[in-house]
Image (cartoon, rainbow, N blue to C red; front, side, top):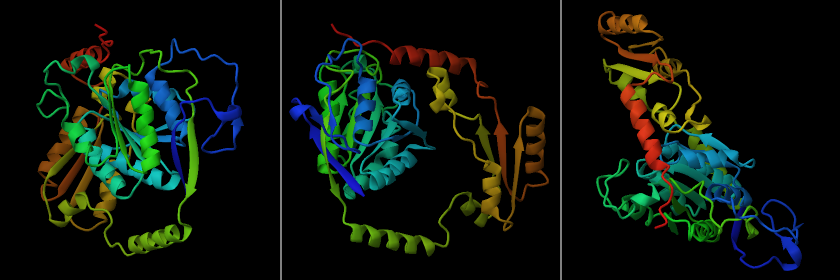
Length: 367
């Protein structure tokens, strides 16, 4: 496994050569003038991730990070991998960093950041370069003494940052465009050079705003590689395989309820995606890959214990399922999957989504 180590080369490449992370030295054009009039933060960040060898970014959509996800999707060299929750995204990025040398995840402010932090702490203890990107509040909300959603009731927005200071080697809070370029590049460079996670918080209204510090062809990183200890790596893989092969019950969910003979009724409401985020800002990242949830519970049940599952698609089927669960199957753990249309939502949620979208997209205040 090769680990990429690097820093930003702010000078001109010697003799016009640019070092790329996954290929030979290439010749850089000498006479091209970069047009920065329309260059923005989102594409710059996406370009940097690809440049250091990140081709898959693990994410969970939330209202603050949706427009940034648009920019990551637009980067041809990046695949956006939607995850079930933030902790999964963090551990996926951890595994990616072990395999590829560096990993990245994108979550939303505080509720996402505090969910992913256990994986980030693990990456810190394992000396893994992992770039944790959190989309924060609108830049105009800093210093206003407002209490926003996704916080724990304080108005300084530092709760998440304070937690990440202990488990990352560098923290970049990007809430203005003047130093955004410098902060992002410094964070990426620190992750590589220190082989530790870094934290990048970016205000939700900055990704698409042009600024002269960004370039359509950013100055490349100067990158070198170092090889891991092959013998140690092989020994670790063998030990992990042996441990997993000995595991008796590697998955524990619903199985605990079945084993303890719980007689609850579980409703899983399945609308195929993230309804709240769809109403705020729709995109392909809001559509999830559906599982066979009732089949999953049946597999855990495995014919042992008392468990009943069903799937309903209309009101009549739901009423019938509740009747069965309450009467004929009252001594079972009942799992009812309710299929809803992705737009089956309340008027209040539609109005709230529109207001949040407008608040998040306010342009930076230059006064």
